[in-house]
Amino acid sequence: MTDNELTYQIRGAIFEVYNALGPGLLESVYEEALVFELKQRGLKVETQKQVPIVYKGNVLQTELRLDIIVEDSVIVELKSVDEMKKVFGKQLLTYLRLLNKKVGLLVNFKTDDIQKSIYRVANNAD
Image (cartoon, rainbow, N blue to C red; front, side):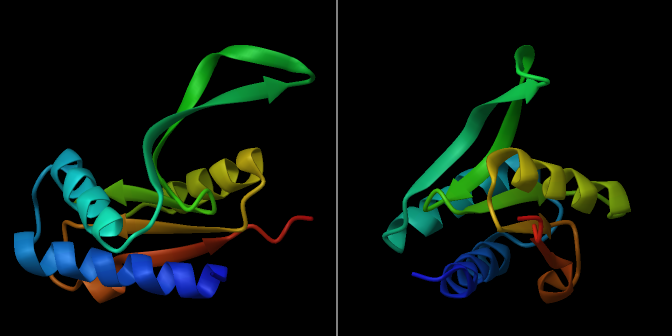
């Protein structure tokens, strides 16, 4: 499955969760529901994955914890906030770079229009 096909499947699951639960719940509620929905679609999902950070050849004690990784390919970061900040997209891009992944989705469930609250972030560094 290509990244585009995979992100299409993930977006469909996001819409399903949003339409069922509505806006404004805790991020953890959306994470659990989205993981359920993605698995129902037959996708491999990992949650709260700890990722070691290497700095100048040294593995740091502090680990990065990602919300969701689908098919070991697409990182999904969830938010339920009043205002999306630019730093959230930059944070996702950093995650993509650290894991050498190409595509991520940043989602804010605290919205009246979920379609306008899903942001695709691409790691174009090779």
